[in-house]
Amino acid sequence: MHKVWKLLLLSSCLAVGLTAGAQDDQAPGQAQANKGSGTRAELAKQPPTLQNIYGRQHVLLDGRWNYIIDPYETGFYNYRRQPFDQSPSGAGGFYDDRKPKDKDDAVEYDFDSSPTLAVPGDWNSQNAKLEFYEGTLWMRQKFVAAPKEGKRYFLYFGAVNYEAHVYLNGKKIGSHKGGFTPFQFEVTGKLLKGQNAVVVKADNTRHQDDIPTVNTDWWNYGGITRDVLLAETPDTYIEDYQIQLAKGDMGRIEGYVQLAGARRAQDVSISIAELGIKTSVRTDANGRAAVSIALSKNKVRYWSPEDPKLYTVSIAGATDKLDDRIGLRTIETRGHDILLNGKSVFLRGISLHDENPLIPGRLRGEGDMRMMLQWAKDMDCNYVRLAHYPHSEEMIKLADEMGLLVWAEVPVYWTISWEKPEVYANASQQLTDLVVRDKNRASVIIWSIGNETPVSPVRTEFMGKLADTVRSLDRTRLVGAALEVHRSGDVVTVEDPLAEKIDLASFNQYAGWYWSNNKEMLKFSFKVNYNKPVIVTEFGADALGGYHADSDTKWSEEYQDQLYKNTFKLLDAIPGLRGMTPWVLTDFRSPRRPHPYYQDYWNRKGLISETGKKKQAFYTLKSYYEQKQQQYK
Ligand code: GCB
Image (cartoon, rainbow, N blue to C red; front, top):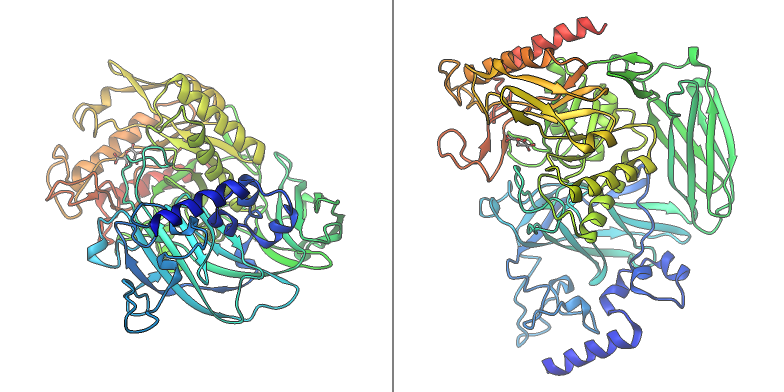
């Protein structure tokens, strides 16, 4: 029987040039567009993710999802390790959500009696058995829908780490790789009136050729870590838009509107009632129109950390309308200066992971996010580095609202497979998805293309292409990367061909921790040979909260505190220093950190401990930032 099955599979692939599973990946809208063609690449196409998903008509499919742990992927592959969803029937996997037909039918899984996990949420923090788990988990949610004629429906995932295969009512609707960026599938015509079930196979196995690669310094939290939404749009809908100040021009909004659907040519109005603005544009046959709006500068309250003013921007066409809350600001560099709305700023920052140390686990929603950003504000920060991968859309919106500038990053971290085109394609896709999602957020001022990537010709070519990609997507923001330093005697230099390609001389350095110590570190001096703003993207020391000793004893709060004081002396001597994001706001979990007493699988460089207690260095950084704030008034 298995042989026959295999033959059938082969012949169906040959006959139509694609598998049953791949066909199921297709969106109905796309099916029409591609009628008669049918190459795998075309069929894999999905409409771009909806801009401003939270501003749409939607239901959240969050809540309790039943789950099945499947380390051998029994629910995905048959015993010959062929995927069930690629078989001619497409059936046989756990996504069938099958029940025994009668008493002589044995089914070896059962969602209904399986335990549940909260979504959004990583699985590691919700069940002790899953703390270190890396592999496949099946998750199922049931929901009731009432699809309407003439409407389109999209199943949208904020993030699933790392690879997701998604099935609706037993049929595959698509798959996605990448743990921190959103993706969606159009499900128009696939939703049932009444009860529906969505099943996700989430797999957080690490691979050398993925982004990130196998080697990182953070917890590999698996699962559906961000919201799941079912969004409804009109037949022709606003797919995307960009509404931001033009580069370096405080007197003009520049952007575009993009419609999708059958009635692509329409009059679309863009209004900002509070500023008395109402403009109309006509979209072309591709649904696109450029937007350019003149502003009277003395009327506008420009967005800044001191005054994070957001305007309600309404976009309305004949078939769809949408509101967004948008801040207006410019960001540029001139020599060593970073100019926010034309005025030099010092970036008083802190780095942070997408992790709540008190759980510990991924940030689950607004409460967790507000806690993290408020801690940064309590330290007089005006800036955060959201390391080392895209944080959630909600987090960026909160930064907009709370008045924090943002460095947003993709997980091109340490040493990845630079020479492989598919690895580049993955990195470039994640960067694109990040820019597409957050391009209307005033808080985001820097797109970071990676962290501590070792200098070599292949790497510099790879990173250079990423810099070009991000500039082609968004000219209005700065491009950064956390570079490495090189030491020769007492001189620490920043010399990297990638620095030529980005807007900042931005680098990590660990004087006093990974090299040297508190007693000796003041002998070092920094040489930064670029006429660009100098941003120190990391420095720090581990301190176990509550462990007190003298300032020469590593792991103590006193050591960390002294290292911060020493570091301020070293960094203040660098001409062109315009900001920093010490490592890191809170202790965070990392499998690389096994010391049983000091670490216990935590990176202890936090200024706030795993219990939420502020360490001494928190107050030291705060008073340093208070001085900087006075200097840059
Ligand atoms: C670094 C990395 C960061 C690590 C940190 C550390 O340079 O960029 O991800 O967690 O050092 O603590 O070693």
